[in-house]
Amino acid sequence: MSALKMMLFSVLVAAIAGCSTPKTSENSGQEARSVRTSSASERPTIVWGVLLNTFDGLGHEMAAQRMSQTCQAMSPFLNNTWVHSKRRGSSVLVGRFRTADAPEARQLMRDVRGIERNGRAVFPRPMLVRIDPRKRPQDFGELELTRVRAMFPDQALYTLQVEVWSDFGTGQLSGAEVRARAESTCQRLRREGWDAYVHHEVDRIISSVTVGLYDNRSIDAESGLDLDAALIRARKRFPHHLVNGEELQEPIDPRRPELGTRRQAPQLVEVPRL
Image 1 (spheres, rainbow, N blue to C red):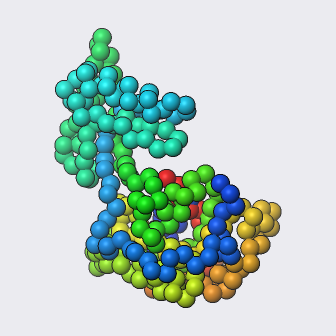
Image 2 (image 1 turned 120 degrees about the vertical axis):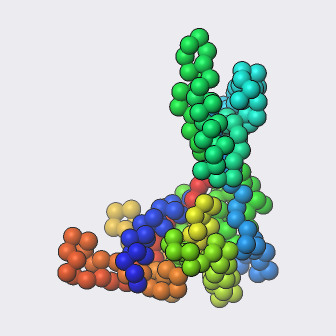
Image 3 (image 1 turned 90 degrees about the vertical axis):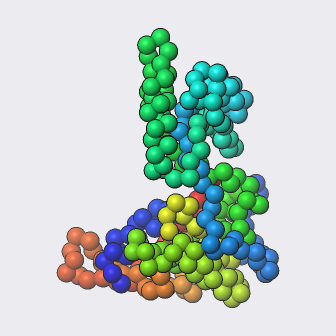
């Protein structure tokens, strides 16, 4: 295992870090054996926009719509203002771009920053932000972990990350190949009877494979010991974390490199929130 993979593991973990009694590996049943996957060549639809303001609390959508209308009448640079709303809040944005480094996006940032009223900047700190427009369970593929979060938006949910695929910036694997390999692993694990999921990073070539769904009752808060029988069984079946099909090595003690490395165990991570 290369040192590069070891260094990037913390990034991989961070990337995946998201009613009634939540489904777990014990009570979810065998979901849809006929699985419809997203095309491996597709990337989730991502839009970049210049953020003008955000609203939360009761009536956040109406407040955002009012501001959007006001902005459109304020300046020609704001005539394509739009609103993105989720359950907890709404954002007012202007412009839609496929990438963050689009020259038009940077120019719009400068134009918005230059809008003044009574000699003062109206938007002194506009930000270019990424928007994933998917909000409903049906917006995600059958294998996607985020589909679970869409169904349980407020529940504390965790899953066991057992494998990660990425090109690590080498260009040796395309985004389509990374997604396809992760989904192939996920489908194989489902055929073996595991509740497996994939999580595709929307703006990086990283895809994770996870197993099971667990809540706060699955682990003892004081000792950190596993309490959920399904989680214990999953750890026995997947004792080592894999990166591109290889076991991931980690330092036994980062402060004492002479102690060498050990094979890393799978990581319990939160199901990403919408």
